[in-house]
Image (cartoon, rainbow, N blue to C red; front, side):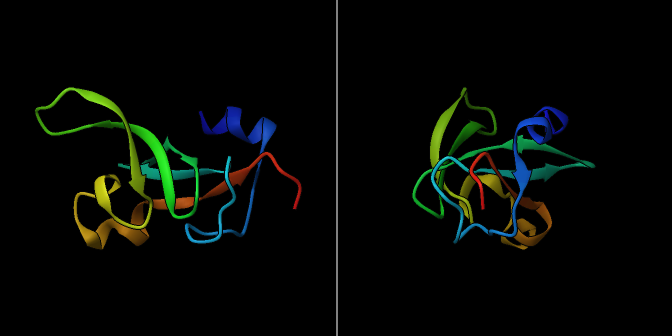
Length: 88
């Protein structure tokens, strides 16, 4: 997915608090950057989510904490950056 994204968007210097609506914040799970969200009103994003033992779905979430992280200490490690389709 990241290879496809990089064909159409560019990595920005924005973070979770400065991303623009429509930006794509990416998150690392395991060894790969493999989970994307769509920025709404920073730091809020919409993304796919599967709870432990629960059916998956799409949820509104805070990209600085919440369901994207198993543990608050994972925040800096999981956030991989923001990609954008918009010109700087």
